[in-house]
Length: 272
Image (cartoon, rainbow, N blue to C red):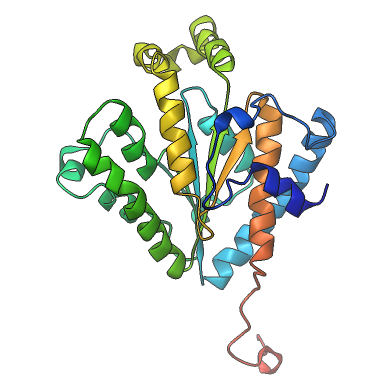
């Protein structure tokens, strides 16, 4: 399967209805196996580092990678493994928690816009402005008529970023409810993972179906040509990492990045 066909299987087609039941979180069909994925991942991590260097030197655009998932979906693990070869000087990771008092006194996109990566940099959002049509919706934190307006507001915001040379990639790390149970249990059993466990995760788990519905609407209404959503089968961590890395590398290669040309004739410069 070619790269274009590969990405079509995980892309939420703009304007189409997304049904998560049509995406199997156990799926590993696009890769020949775990060992092959490991070898390809090593190449992609190296290639991503090379592309980042050109992006930084070119200084014409930035790349924004958005990660969303249910609790235990693997956002932290994805950042750790896929982005392991990046130069920290040109990479920014932002995690969005409950809004502060200052953030709450502004529009919901204010804190997001502040964190958008500068030209030449790669920015990674661990959760994002989509929380304002996910958790806000599920927990009825604002009236329905307020969060319903946010889909169009998000699309216009992302369109603006795109016009300002921000390349946007959005990934939903799709795990099953059974896999989430397994990962939450691991946090209880493994002392090195105890710190990750929160009883709030169990309360959120009770709202699984509500979150699935909220995600389906967000993916359906906010996958656009300028800011596409990709659904990554994420029950198998190695497959999740491989597929996401492939998507990021392919997208950066499609930008036809190039090192800037020297402003002066270097052949005439002699260092004494």
